[in-house]
Image 1 (cartoon, rainbow, N blue to C red):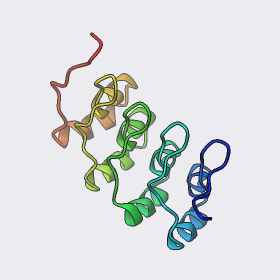
Image 2: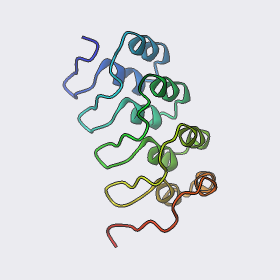
Image 3: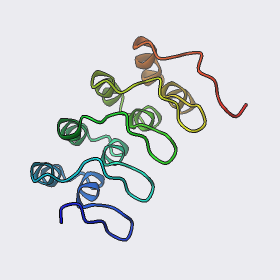
Image 4: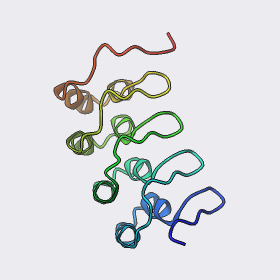
Length: 141
């Protein structure tokens, strides 16, 4: 019953991650809730925590899953989301947790593209320092 989905195909773990309920996320993971299930937008709990820039929940999900390179319906990892929406320290954290900065979304955008598009100068610098691909091609032009 821990992984039962609602009408939006979200589990209690996904809802807790999205609502930043750290203690509930911890309890659900300790009771063996599956952190590798997706909702109707193909978002994992990791994507939902990244949107909220919640380091504690991201770290909990990593401890219980280890899957950090999962992609959503647009082919984006949590690193794409954080590069686009800020959370520069979390960009560093995800790189430390071995998220692949070279992963491209469905349009060919890497996290570096997303950081550049959003004018997130700090994330651009962090990604370049980590050797992020600068020659990646945009698929649509």
